[in-house]
Length: 321
Image (tube, rainbow, N blue to C red):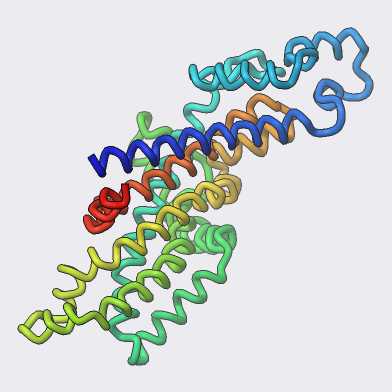
């Protein structure tokens, strides 16, 4: 029952947080000073056109009624229609969300694959020159912006070596091989900086593990350092790492906006910038809510995953209740 209550509590928190976020997003974008219709059509638009657009956008109604209607449409997966083209927004955003999801997921997996062994090595060799070198490399990686790493990779692997394309995108269903070739540089650009950040946390977590009594006991019975760190150290360090992974995964969606611009990927970040430039309020609201929802889902997943990683939290939570 403790586990079910925990999940139910986290889900309730997620729903409340999502409602609060929707109010903030709607309020910021709809209660700004100025006339939205005039902003979209321009100062030279005739009064009849302005009034027609206000009615189309629902600007002539009470703000609370507009919010509730907008929220109800969101719950049904209806993001409205584009003011300029009249197309439904949801089908327009779907493919762009797929592009961003692939970029963020692949970037995080690659970052973890780099950061965990690198951070473990930096912790194990912390009193050696190799450990100092590993720490210095991670510090340099943290100082390099993602867009700069992307530019360097493009110059080396696209311009000089001609191994990979510098920009563009091919859908996965059209050509998986070409899709992978176009995604390599964006994913690596996003992953390198994140791996540098994660490796610092991995290093700190494993330095604590190396000082634990159970670790010394494992070494005293003949286990190698590597075996003890992999067999038991990963699980004991995972609790603190999961928190960092959740925060970093959320920031990856922000970093993806820059990477999509550098490599001309048709993802959510690029669509958001284009919608702002085109003054498409409905598209901006939809994309921002999607990004906010993804961040909240990640945070809820991190909270729930604590129990799976550390059973002590599950039993403690149940006793408190």
